[in-house]
Length: 276
Figure 1: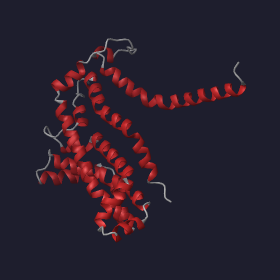
Figure 2: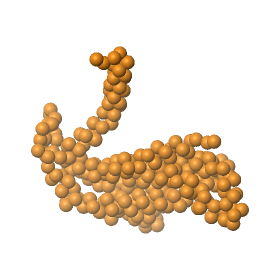
Figure 3: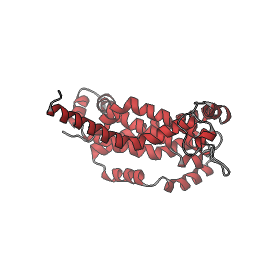
Figure 4: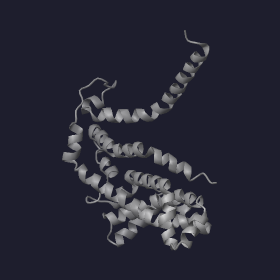
């Protein structure tokens, strides 16, 4: 027979999972609805009340790739996201190191302003500049635009990591014959690995999901996935099946990356906040 302690423990576990379900369901329901809708025919998607029993179809996914050239848009998004993340790391890691080691508060404040300022404030000057340079609808313009988001983020994530590493480690490496640059690459960067992984993943996700710069700075050649999804919304009607299938295609890589790297993301976001 179940004891009072065991009953209390079981009720506590049930209450815990009920609370977890209540928190998670509002976030999971749109994803579940999106996936189910992408597998329905157009008539079932718009039917009221909703249809829960249906025969799945992949026609919308086939149409997305066959009729809308989504493979090209995936390639564009990948090139731009990888390029902006890579260049943001090249510039952001030394900048974060400089801020941490030399207490450059004014430089840090400037990075903060760039981080919190709405992206739309940069959009018109960016478009005018690229128009004069004939760089609209190029990968270069999109990579530079997305760096406005990724670069400040990487600097602000990595600065606490460099601040948390004792300067004596760097000095010891320089005494052993390493230059300051060598100490940075051989000692500091390996120790800040979780932060580098975390900032890289999140900067990539921010770029992958960015819509605002893409809708203004891209054309047929460099159009990204978020902008391509907008094509399914016409004045007369909305292609809900294609829209949902396209949304699944955009969301799936981000979810997969988050699931694979969640341990590094949590470790990176928490490690930078702890100082000895």
